[in-house]
Image (tube, rainbow, N blue to C red):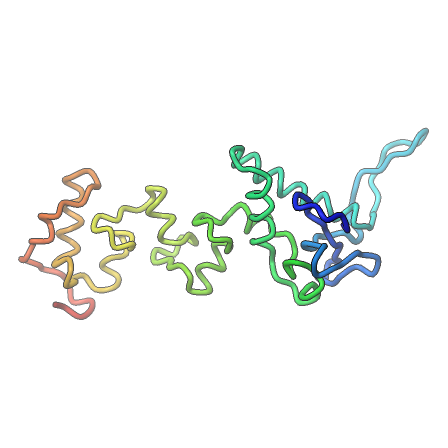
Length: 212
């Protein structure tokens, strides 16, 4: 863990209470993050003995958890270089008070966060939403911008709000006279917003919010 090499991820061991294991290395500059390393069920073999499973402890138990997350990221993003992979692992670590100030990230490896960061801002999707960085208007647990980028939701008027949510915030808006009409225009144009749709003036929207 003390080698001054940029392509190393140095791992501390934690227990099941998110506390630093008594035997673990740590360091605010050289140890990047923590991972489970105390009483880990693992395969075990010795010469002349039948292979079995044992409860083992050590940073040698913690490091494979991080290796597994690295492997997952590379399998999903084979074009990524090592720096991008390392950055994602460190940026999405789950903060843990016991590691604050004694590791680079102050957190524990977070496979879910590393894999599920659809807008690639270094914040796991659930934290993006709960922290208010991203909206989740349709409550599908994905940031709205990811719904739009992936094609799961249309955004005909390019306002960053999925079309299925437009009526939830008030149907009639100043910049688009009638979202229901906008939606209809989009459907006619295979999901591509027509500027002419903004001229729909005969808006018969239900009263869900302030009207222009």
